[in-house]
Length: 555
Ligand code: TEU
Ligand code: CA
Image (cartoon, rainbow, N blue to C red; front, side, top):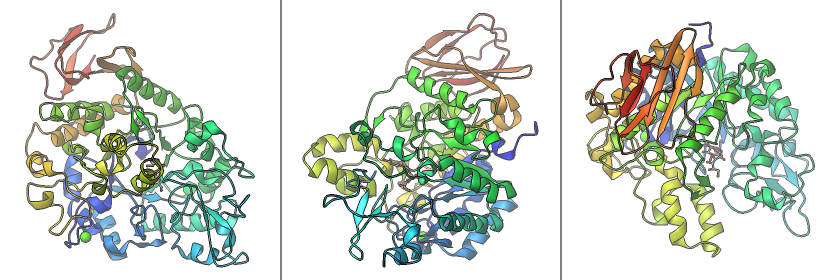
């Protein structure tokens, strides 16, 4: 419709395969487990799936460390399982996008195994090697997972660069051979029939000329330097020319370190780079590294408005409230106490699915899954946690108690606990021992109890997607925040041609009287999240909003 590319009208569902559905009892989700749940996803109403890395990997970072880009991770199955999964998706009219992790590979990738052997190995320049300086690392770059971003390698005495774990050496994109290897990998999967890529930390691929030290202020947020290499746009335009322009693919870049001002450089269609990016400003609104800070509704609204502006008339955006790197949506922006969990989860779903952007749902959010009740450090699995524990707690900079109190709310593991399918043991995720503990609230919060219950969170998501599909203004319409400074209510309109819709969301536990700005009148209610006690009458110019009420009206 409207001649728009399919990916503007798509609704994407992210699967973190390790935690989705285990079919062989080894405690690890697998591709056959995804295939078995496609009808569940189809009924929910998503049409595109983003699969977190499914490639052969030693799992230093759960697959974000790839050993072989053309092989399926053995824990997840094999290529026949992948082909069957993809065919079953297509049979249901669904598309698949996969995770392209090419800022770095695993240190067990054949390229790195060769590269580290000697300075004159033909693969030496596939990675970034430097001599040390003054008996230490070549510069002061920190790794996101703790310590230095440089690791000294015994074989040659030189250091290699790794922005993430030391088992994730950064590829050298300056080397045209590396770029061509990446393009070949992309063609391999596109030719198999995948419909695009989510690109992991893609702004980091071009490194600073001469690799100078970071300034003291940049040391706290190295992503803003790492993301601003001199040739990132040149490489993305080349990738587009060489590969993407030959396929009908969706590309979404994970834009860690990219400011609102820079966003259009990646997403302005006239530049032929990427279709959309994930901004960090909203999901990390209340964060300073592992530290949790307070947030206010006007700040959240400002982030949405700014994201919308970066789309401009030549770009496009994503709408998402979590992923495998962030806490659970309802625990983060809603209220996960028993009284408010369902209604606030539905309110947030309403917000996220009525933006001028492609929505990206994360597995389990359609059930209102919550953060995990972590106790001690031993409850965590994440490589990032291990590095931070070392840098902050073991070093004596921060007490264990202080670190853990923040981590409980900010840890990536919150989103990685297994899917809660039913009230059966382990939430029906596995018949074995799950690789990461299932949230004990699976007894109350699970798919089986929600799919057939019309008032469930799952069915609210389903209805929202239905309404979105049938209402072009909710996809393409202009976005206007009616009341940016209101601390309790998010009120915005979506307008396309002569159609105009109003979304009202009450972010508080109280009833709030909300008067519409001059001249606006409600015509009908399109969808609400179940909080209303009385339908508003046509012609109303104000609404008494119930706690966590979220309603879409036609004006
Ligand atoms: O994450 C990018 C990233 O840098 C952050 O989101 C990360 O989660 C961390 O909080 C930074 O402190 C991507 C992937 O999504 C993540 O799972 C990987 O661990 C990372 O890249 C490395 O591939
Ligand atoms: Ca399994």
